Image (tube, protein in one colour):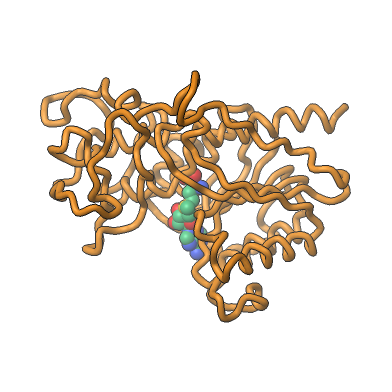
Length: 310
Ligand SMILES: C[S@@+](CC[C@H](N)C(=O)[O-])C[C@H]1O[C@@H](n2cnc3c(N)ncnc32)[C@H](O)[C@@H]1O
């Protein structure tokens, strides 16, 4: 299917959709480094600008619109006025594109926390907004480990299907293929990254450098011991309080994950090169939708395209 991608970042989501056989025809992000990474690895179809500067008429029509909109403005106080709240510009823009372009489907990614804002009122409002824009909406809470990603990352995926395609949801959400126990067990962090050489020795692995931020176990996010036999905790995009991104400690306890190791936990291919300083690279990776999961979504779009043609 033809896809327009908003808030595309380094392109984790887009890469998975493309690997499945779809075509991303237009993408956008405000972050210069993320756009440079995207161009280097995916294509020149990304525009580097604040989405607020973009005229909706300049965005091409497509079968699908995808994107993860940041949601700072969703507060308990003002739940019924989500679209009127100035802090919700990014959500508003996503909504505006869907409403005016009317793609067959949209896919929006968000953090798990979106389900609890206003005790569920925010997500209810989002569903109501998109229903009003002409869509049937389904909300899925996903643990990426269930899809073969070596990471217990939980994210919310919102699927929209234009109402004229039928009342029944045609988009069959990919079924989990891995589980905590049983035959097809979650992939551990060790299985995912143990083959990499010691980054302190000479090597030719791309982006195989790590943050000097000390490993001290303090039992909060980014400062817990990493169990080699379990999936990694969530690869983070946010800071350590000093402006840097806090990379997960390596299970050897001696250092933090390299950029490359973090990217592998997010299932980026090993030849995917990240542009920017160390913090920027960690941030781009932490922001991404794991490529392996995105590919599953992409495969469903390919299946649907055939079903709709028939
Ligand atoms: C969660 S990340 C998306 C990651 C992407 N889906 C991926 O899989 O790699 C959200 C992105 O929104 C971008 N963003 C934030 N504000 C923006 C704005 N005003 N205009 C355009 N992009 C913006 C950020 O730079 C960030 O890359």
